[in-house]
Length: 212
Image (cartoon, rainbow, N blue to C red; front, side, top):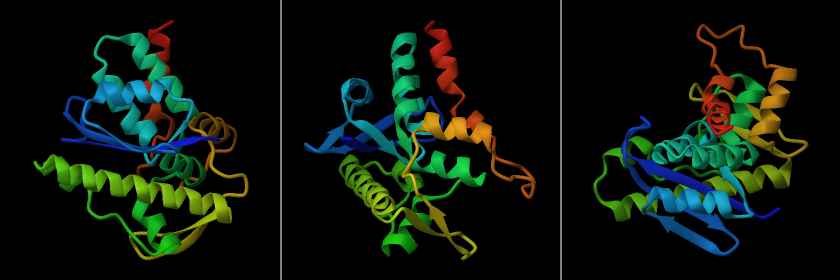
């Protein structure tokens, strides 16, 4: 299955913030996008399966918001997002809470991100942001490949607790993870404010319904 690892950088987390850049790594190399619609066009026309970290809840949703009133383009992005691999969403569906890329990369690979999204949102040097985004996508690819090769990923929480995320069947698409979440939801009884996992990607069914 050909894959396209990707990430975007924006000026904030609101859907009304500005798109700074996007980076894709596929079998043809590394591609940099400075126009959101060009990246959206790539994702909706490529035969590669998109791989992201929180892409279902943020990256795809942000690109859909950039499409304005084009409900059919939003729906196409929702369809691609549902077929994509989103490592954070996959983890959340199994565990009931979010994780960071660093929490997996550190114990699994012995490495970490070069900076943070908060830094990228405030940085004005686009070349530096692209460099950071490219490094993030490369790290995402390493983490994904490690999980596929070893059928598990190690994780270290912010509190220092270490655990193992078993991946006997590999990573699930967003649609598969959501289906299995409904069939066998994780225990969230210990959380004072449980994460609304389906709600994090609610924009997808909304976008699809608007186009019907």
